[in-house]
Length: 235
Ligand SMILES: C[S@@+](CC[C@H](N)C(=O)[O-])C[C@H]1O[C@@H](n2cnc3c(N)ncnc32)[C@H](O)[C@@H]1O
Image (cartoon, rainbow, N blue to C red; front, side, top):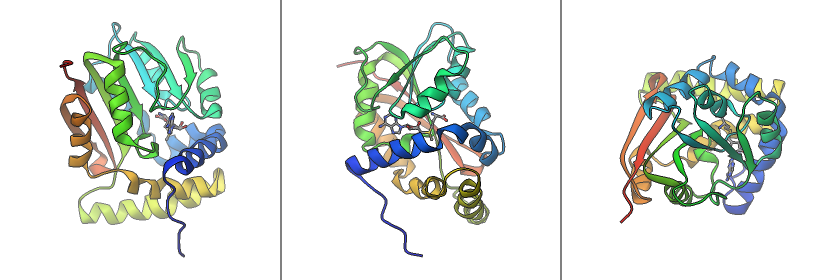
């Protein structure tokens, strides 16, 4: 079957927003199912890597239904969740948190320069229209020494793992997702990994935006990744 080319620019933003608004009601349940319950462990790992604690003021970028917001709050941090999909934010607002939620584009955050100590982002990098622009915006809102932890899916490097992973991610997930939620959304999910630049380019792009000490950890044989970095001193 010939697939439609993946959208770019404004068409991508509109398609992504509409898609998440559509799948919001079952988003959490399918996340747990497709990650075999590991997605929450990966979010906790991201918070551990950057040592989130009670003194942190966190912006959770593309917060969706608020999983990371809730986990960060249990560590005593003050959290604001931002997302551009209204239905995902409604899901987040239904949680018992003290967090504030703001509907906006991740590339234009309505926050003061250097107002946050941490930015987190779960599974959304491949959905942004321009990652370099988002990274520059994150560098702006973080104070010097502020930390970022960005989680996303990836594809394993080892050829054996790649075959098993592809069978699951490219065949089983779209099929089950189609039955339980939305066919086109869960076909887009594996295809959207094509938007992610290779790891060295991703790290270079973060550093170019004003971060230092960028590192990448892989999870489950490379099926997921966490990028961390520290906001460099302003020059
Ligand atoms: C895969 S979901 C991840 C949600 C949540 N972070 C999590 O860990 O489950 C991706 C989210 O990114 C949001 N998103 C994508 N592009 C965005 C943008 N440009 N600005 C704000 N939110 C965006 C979507 O609306 C969606 O809620």
